[in-house]
Length: 586
Image (cartoon, rainbow, N blue to C red; front, side, top):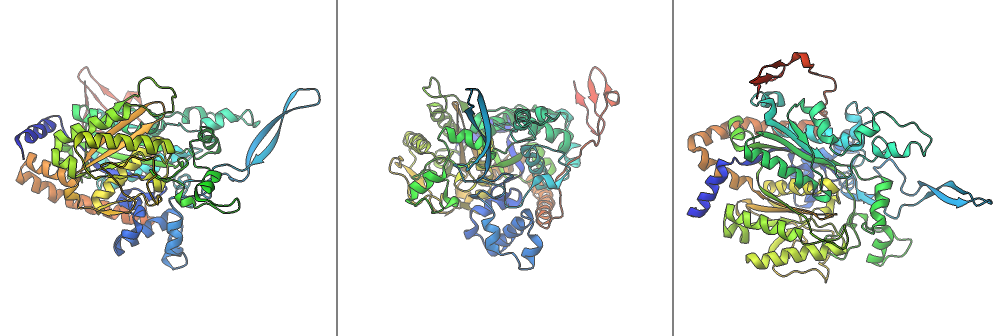
């Protein structure tokens, strides 16, 4: 290792390394843990064992496990029940959306009448057909985003391969944090959407709608009903870059030593008629009419909904998706101590605004800065060769005509500046749509899958790169590409959000992270870690199998272990919280 790189790595170790030791969630591709959602993207490239595991997971999610096991439900039907598709797993009829038409009576007084209309947008990245998180625990009129958060956080804990109660006894209560939220808030009938509409519909506003609609509520639910945490909490919101904003807060906490374990993520449920109409009014979404025009179809021909999102190709707008993704970050010392599996290391996250703008929703210069900083930092961490020959980009890739031009230009300019040739670019919104605040969490999830299974998913919904997309020095992957994770240690996650919210991060592969940790702790301790990790990996594997067999429900502890103030043991040096072995030191 060159002296300069060794010096940088030693400096990184002194500040602690943030590693991903667990992940979980749900999106249009399926359940996140066990890399099942990732494998849905590359279903055609899987070996028989992986394919069987994927199908079992999808069968469980869609409520078809027994019929599928008995051969009464086909493999193809399970695959078709996921990813982007036409309306079918939503609580509304896209052909008959209730609306009000304004008019004036014979005296010129404003009136309205109830009517119905067909949505201009007819597809989205919906959760797998039949999957309803509300049925998995006592959801008590929770907004859908919070239901998904309970499921996703529970899935992340299961993926850890170690019981949460055991993990937390190794930590002081204030060494834990949860940073999670949603960019849009909870806008369905059980959240702020219902609060705003109740009077218009002649209904009573409930006592829950106002509180449960808040954008940081996913973190609140995880603390109160999943973890029982009294540690740091909150959410930093930045439009489509929201997850990376939260990841930066989590990373800063761990590198500074303030926290040793952070759950970071987002849960976004934007598939409601009102949100669809809002984005469509901005001409941001792929409508039915525009998809027909794009493919030269007649008015009575149905577009291929599966190909509604076409990043960097000839496209007509993005496709909404719903997703809840959560990652467990720990410092490297805790991972070694407990034998937790290291799925990747979080390098650095950079956030910048666009400066003066003509349009608040238009792109600007901020993303050049965030990507440039991420690339320079990655080069310091891993060296010139890793950046030039061992990195790939999980692009924002929203599938709008404007984004395809502006984002490609960013990569081309920076590839020129850093001397990169044939830089691999992929964009997973092609499969799951744009989940707004959770979008970059989807990108990180599928990056972990690439390193685990050795495949970069191609942008298979795009036949050809659009003529106005800059391709100098870039390699847009239109087909799945097999990779050697040992030779591809570096990944960039990019997010371009409305309002000038830009964020870019780089991640380090588990293979490279293992090499660093082995050098840091020494051969003897590394060997002890690997031995301890065997049982952790096995437990995570068992969890994956049990969930697919419908034997596990989300962790939801409503009203359990409630702590009253008089139960605290308080002095001027420490506070002892019941249920925790270690005190909070003041």
